[in-house]
Image (cartoon, rainbow, N blue to C red; front, side):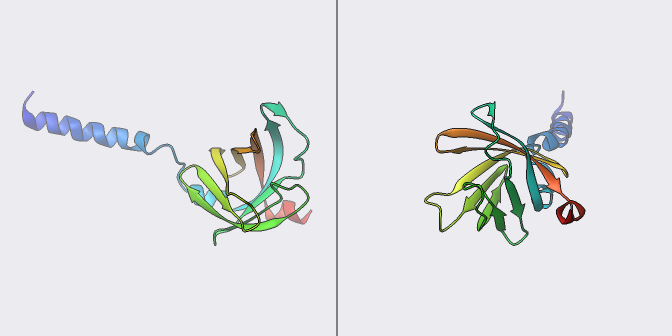
Length: 135
């Protein structure tokens, strides 16, 4: 194999592998995240839990979010930062930031995992449309 065909092969391989290497973050993830998400299913340490049945998240384009986590029944507006597949929630009222890992995101489903007080939580959330919010 001469040097020219080697570089052509290397370039072709790079072009083919580039989408795979960048595939850990869905395209348009920030836009998909925006809006209101309501809990469909939750687990705590792998077991289903009903204690968070009213859980919701609202992500806004200005970097603010509204959620009733970590205190169910109380709503708090905080700030968030999306960094790859991680969401960091910042609040003056919280001693530490909360972080969530995006296991899956689409236009209708958001699956998050987090750890709170040494408990591992997984949330399957459903995106709410404007029509669903009015009902």
